[in-house]
Amino acid sequence: MKIDQLFSVAGKTVVITGGSRGIGEMIARAYVDNGATVILTSRKASDVEGLAAQLGSAAHAIPADLSQMAEIDRFAAEVARLTPKVDVLFNNAGASWGADFDSFPESGWDKVMDINVKSVFFLTQRLIGLLEAAARPDDYARVINIGSIDGQHVSGIETYSYAASKAAVLHLTRMMAKNLAGRHIAVNAIAPGYFPSKMTAAIAEEFAAGSLAATPMQRRGDADDMGGVALFLGSRASAFLCGSVLTVDGGYATTV
Image (cartoon, rainbow, N blue to C red; front, side, top):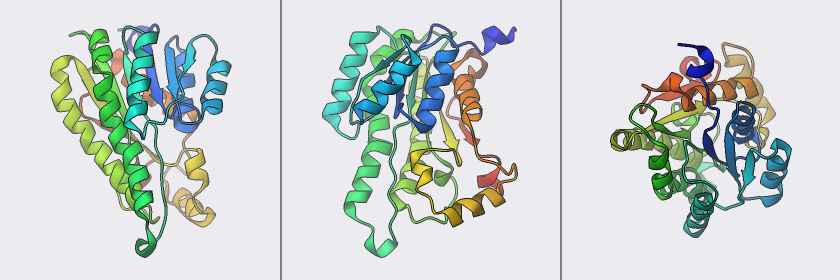
C-alpha cells in the first residue's frame, strides 16, 4: 500500500459544520490542501463566507443556524443542489454554557443540547441520501462527530449541558455506527482536548494553565494535530474503524 493512496482524500466532497473557525477551520484547511471540495456552514455568514473566500474555488459557504430544524432542512437542501454526493460529513458545530449549579438556566441547557446533539442526529438524517450516493462496499462514506474529552471525564468547569451533550455525542456515535454500517456508512468520533478556539478562549486563565501543566505532552493541540486525525478518518487508512472515538488531547483526559 502506498501512503499517498492510503491517506488520500483527493476528489472527496466534505461537509463541515461549525466550519468557519477553530477546529472546523483546521479540518477545512486540511481537506482543501489535500484535494477535497468542502462545503462549510456556520451561523455567522460573514465568518464562513470569509473563510470560503480564503480557501478558494474548492470551498463553498452556506450560512445556517443548525440549532433550528427549519435551518437544518434548508441547509441539507442547498447541499443537495451543490453536489450529488457527500463522502464525508463532519458534525462539528457546537456551543457551550457555563454557570454554577444553582443558577444554571434552561436557556443554557436547550441552546447547547440543540446544536451539540440534536443537529448531529437530524443533519445526518437529512443528508443520508447523499452519503449513500457516495458509499461503496469497498469505500464507505464517513460521518465524523466532534465530541470532547469533557464527555469522557469530569471537568473542573461547571459546563453542565456541554459535558452532558458531548457524552451524548459519543454514545450517539456508537448507535449510528451500528445502524448505518449496513448502508456502507462508517460513523466515528473525535474527542478533542484543548485546541485554540473562541470556545476555549473563554476558559479562565488559572484553569487553562492547570490543565496544561497536567497534560503529559505539555502543550496544546494545533492545526496539524487535528488535520492529521481528520484526514485519517476520512481516508482509506481508517476503513475498518466503526464506532470508534479518537481522543486527541496530549494524554490529559486519561491521565489527569
